[in-house]
Image (cartoon, rainbow, N blue to C red; front, side, top):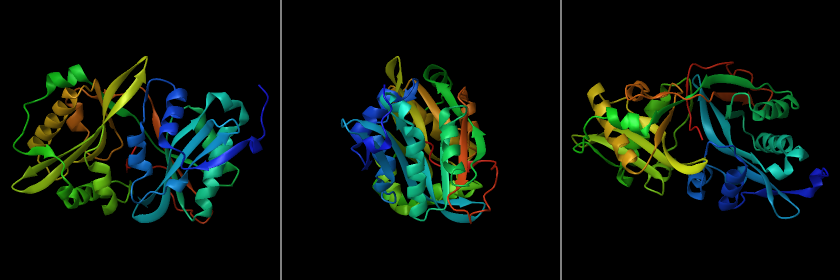
Amino acid sequence: MNIQPMESFDEVVNPDLDEVSALMRANWTPPCWLYERELLAMHIMRPTADPTMAVGLRAKNGELASYLAFVPMRLRVHGRIYKAVFASFFTVSSHFRRHRLSDHQQGLMVDRARDRGYEVYTAITVAGTPANQTVARAFGARGLPVRAAHNFRYLAGTGAIVASRLGSSDRDHVRPYAPSDDGAAFALLSAAAARAPLAHVVEREDIDFSLRGRPRVKTYVYESDGAVTGLISMSLLPVVSGQVGLNAYVEALALGRLESSARTAFVDTVLRSVLAEGAQAVMVPDTGCGDQEVFRRLGFRAAPRKLRLLLAPLRSDVTDLPDTVDGFCLDVF
């Protein structure tokens, strides 16, 4: 294959999400989640996001060759608020991997973020994969350091083991999220994020968009005496691994106002519901944000894949980022 110059690729801002989903499915190595249009939109199209920070490179033959989204957020690190981006959904077509598109795509997006005044970059990568070196090269070329600020894994529970340990459902207190719950949800998720040394700042206008009932997203609240005191949001994600299965994934968790018995009953009721929808396994990111012990008692164990939180300044005057953090509260997608 001849190496085409970068002039052979056109930048395309916010490409169609069905096309992006197809690119990801064709090129991600199983086992991996299958991000469909609706799930991509939950992050890229939310009210405080900026779809123009989701960019692809298109080959002259019309094929989408690569894609990377920088999702804007306000990031609190040890009490200081930064204008930040979370990098995700990085994909390069196998047809073009000899063209150094990985480095070009990363550099393109880093410069785009810098030009728009963002201060801090974050991302979740799999330890030992080439993406880590690609990010390091992009920032190194600009004289900026990248930190592996926190290493973690998912906690995983197989459907059969989890189901065998669940208690009875608590239908008196657990119900699906309703749009009128957005104020309570905002307070609960803000309180959960406030406990972490590094966390996104929860935005009120994003709450209902992210939590409302939509294909593959299930959100539940715990209500007692008319007050909503707990929240769990799950995505039912198709998994590509030989054949397409279904995993339940914990997107948001706020249990801090519940006593131990209520936490147990709430989690058991929600998990019983998502397993009944066909989930073969349940995953929760063990980042130190929220109560993971409530899952470990159900037989959840650390998954083998090692993940890391990358943290980097986008400007040379941002010099006070920590080298490591004990935990963090971010969407992991």
